Length: 360
Image (cartoon, rainbow, N blue to C red; front, side):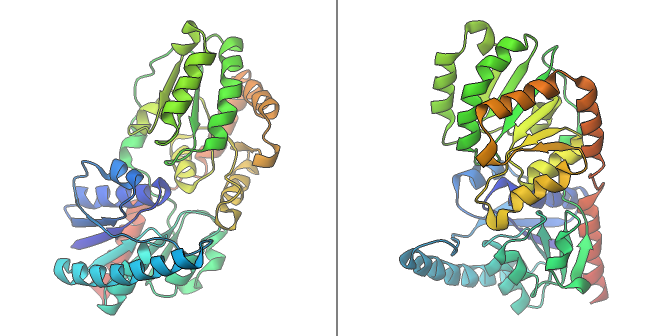
């Protein structure tokens, strides 16, 4: 069977699509992939084992009239390009992970009578997925509570697919505690800034602490330079600064605790690994979905939620010190985080959509 997967914008949309593509290839399916033209998309999809096509699209919300007009023209061109591509590739299934790049592909696919599926990673969907849910055959949801936003008869609870290599434990490269700082695939300037203020003290107070900090591609040089100025030689040896971490399995294997945003892919991966976290959700995410994501986890004891407006260096440092000082607390939080994990999410998606093709 031939599949076309569309995913782009951020790692939150890309990684579930990649996880499904990887499982399809293991099953011997023919897989094609459509993504955008942004730098992060090119970095994540570099050296992919499947053919990747690009569409140049932009979002509409929160933009000037001129930029909305430009986005509208790009969307029109993308629909035509997607229509021609689908006609050429002739997939039996089109699977979209949401966002504005999914619009032209799903629309063109429905015009050609293809079986279509949509994946929602967050507890609160954005406008794109709410609209697309009216067009697709199935909507796959990751977190209980998000199903209320979609047509009831189309919803399947699948969880959020994670790449299988993440589940492969890598060798621990340090003897002590590990802290992993993440801002999502694009980085997070707020978390970068607060880390610069608290990491020197953490490394001083916890002599066995090893820290990995993913800064994002754009902020890497500045953050690395600031750490060079702030830290002593011995502390620098216990800090690894990265613009983007390709091998997240390695990074998670080094960590006992995560400090970061509350994007859907981060949550899904922490569920799969069973890693506790301190979440500082991005306050300007669509419909404040990151805070809602984080709250659903914090209420069950898997994480601590700190709103960005309340995330002073003193507060974040206090929470980090408290957790790093009590390994038993971290273990309980890890168990709570693991309880959210849905095994074989990608197989649930694949089986359901291929069943629709067979019954058509």
